[in-house]
Length: 120
Image (cartoon, rainbow, N blue to C red; front, side, top):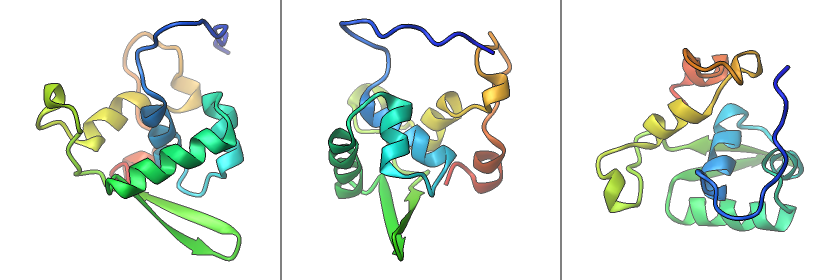
């Protein structure tokens, strides 16, 4: 098992939006509570991020009773001009990994779910 690094103040390589999107792509039925725990955010912050992602059509959801099922738009192009032409799929291919592969220096893979669904 790979040791989880301690939280450090200051900058990070990934935005919270990228972390939330990756968590949803890895499990489209994930609860906001679980996203918050996984990404080390508050539930309120996760709700705002999901709202941002839905507003700009990177993400949509359907509701079945008390359960949300999210759908990531894999062909949507990333927002920043420096990533012109890169799609959500290209970002997620770097971020979504099986827990068994987490921490390996190379040869990381998409989760089985993301591989079969095209990162949703």
